[in-house]
Structures are given as structure tokens and as C-alpha cells.
Length: 461
Image (cartoon, rainbow, N blue to C red; front, top):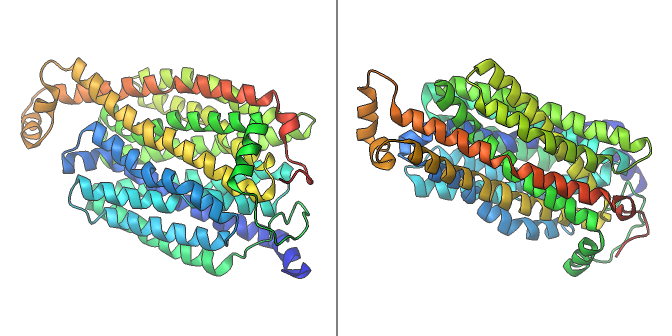
């Protein structure tokens, strides 16, 4: 790459285009997750599933190959073209999203969700590494927040548009309608984005030596305690955040007795607004404060949001008012999301350029294992458990299957199965948010050594 090419990749116009296109990738990344959450109740009824099975589809099925492939793809992104990896990833997960609309049973849907996880495993490491080579240290958290603004747009798009399509034509049509445009975005990434030199914005010298091996990366992790605590804290926060996001539409539909399209739209609004506020305030706010003299503010800000969020969520899950519940869910979600943008920026800032994709891949793996792998599965199991103990009778026999649906349709008063299911998901979510206190402690521990663990040119392995 010659000097003119490098100047083009660092030009304001190219950078704006880069942020816009990579944000569009994030839109479809999060739209897939939101559409499943919005239509989960409809899928459950159509395929006769339990909440545990819903949790597996939104959790373990998605997380299995995501976690398995995340680190190898992260290592590949240190050597191969990250733009091609990103393009191939969105094409794969979008095709598998569309395939979800063609399945006929739980096992087939499980396999499609595994395929979605395979595609999405490549997106975050490649994106974060590309951001690190286009923008300087004091801008990375802010730029990542702009890229991740695609997530609230995607959440709103997947939940609201998917919910309306599902309400009119069924959940299968919604998955197909969402998957096809993602393939088009993948082709655009392949045609438009160019691969930058590693360490371009850090002015590191051009080198043809291979990137540091995995043992060198592990040594860096052991040496930088702040990095270890940031990755662990972000991963634990993902447990609670994913549990809430994947079961929020189910909670809204059951608690407030909403049709799927209204429940999906309300979920989309809550997710979109809270994600936007949390990402912007957390990233730009902590970047601004860190620029005033103390680089520990990203960790402090993340810890503060995680400490406050559980109390607000407990109020949100306890109220019977739709308006108050909606407002508190937005406020609590915004506090929770204060951690996400700064976490991405801190990982980038503590690693040398040719380790950044691996660092983000490790975070993505742990975030996926704790968040998508364990979070929704645990909440689904806990929801079934709480529903069973609150129900007077055999919940599984009386509340699942065609006979249960027929019996419910003949009731003149409140459906005891619906009451038990609403109680179950509410109690499960109230239990899950306690993990945020542990995540906050991790970020506070990270702040103790962060000032000496930030990367400076010349620190290469």
C-alpha cells in the first residue's frame, strides 16, 4: 500500500463511509437477534416448545459454534483480509436467518441458529480490528459506539418490522424478509471497503514478520491485569444483558397481554432507545472524561452503570403499568449499556495492533458463552421452574400442547397457565440481573492498573 492509498483510508470522507457501512453490518447483526426475541412466543406456540427450549434456541444453539470458531477467526483476522472476512460473515448469517423461515421442527431450527452463530462469530473481531487501524486511541470507544449504533437500529428493525410481518404473515415470512437484505449488504462490504495496513493510524512501521503467536497474546493477557478484568466484566455483563434482551418481548407479551406485533414494536422501541442512550453516553462521555486527565473513566463509568441497573430493572419488572414499565426498562437499559462501548475501546487500547482482533475475539467468545450460551438458557429454565411452582397442578401437562390451547380458549376468566407463565418469566429476569454487581466489581478492579496497561508504540511483543 503506497502513501496515497494510506492517506485515502485516513481521509474524513472514507472514514465516514467506513463507519456508515460497518454500522449497517451491525444493523443486520442485531436485527437477527431481535427478530427471534420478538417472535419467540409465536414460535413457541407454533412448534410447541418450552421456555427452556426457547432459551436453548436463543442461547446455546447460537453460542455453540460462535464460541468454538471465534478465536480461530480472530487469529485469522490478524493475517488475512478483514474486509473479506466481514463480508463472508454477514452473507453466511443472513442466509441462515432466511433459512430459519423454512424449517419444520425444533431440531431444524436449532441447526439454523447454529449457522447464524457461525457467521456472527467473525463480525466483531474483524470490525474492531479495522476500527483500530483507522482511528487513534482517544477516538476508538467513540467510533465503536457510532458503529454499534447499528445495534439499536437493528433491534428496532428486527423487533418492530419483524413483529408486524409475523403478526400478519407469520414468523417464517419475517425471517425470510430479514435475511435477504443482509446478503446484499455483505456484497457491498466486499466491493467497497479496502484493507488497511496493520497499525496504520499508530504509525507503526511496515513489517512482513508474522503477527505474535497465541502464546505471546496469552502473556500479554497475564501481564495486563486490567485487560483480563475488562474482558471478564464485559462477559459477565453480557449474561444479564442477553438474558433480558432475549426474553423481554416474551415478558411484555405475557405480563401486559399484548398481541405479538405490539409486543414486538414495544420491545423494539425499548431496545432501540436504551441502546442508543447507553452507547452514546457511555462511549462519548467516558472518552471526554478520560481526555480531561484520567484514563480510568471508561472503567469507572461502566462500573457505575452496572451498579445502578439492577435496582431499576427490579422496579421495571415489578410494576403493572405499561407506561411506567416501559420508561423504567429504557432507563435501566441505558444504565446497563454504559459499559459496552468503553469495553470495546479499552480492549483495543491495551493491545498492540496485531493482537486486537484476537483480544476482541476472546471477549466475544466469553461474552457469547456467558451471554448467549448460558444467559437465555438459564432464564428459560428458571422461568419454567418458577411457573411450575406457582401453578396449581401439572404445569407441563396442562399448559403445553394442542389440548392446553383448546382448554385455554374455552375459559371465561383469566387463564391460570398464562398467569403462571408471566410470573415465571418475570421472576427469572429479576434473578438474572444480580450478575451485574459482579461485573461492576470486575471493572473497578480493572481501573486499579489501567494507567500502566495501556499500549504505547514500542510495546510490541
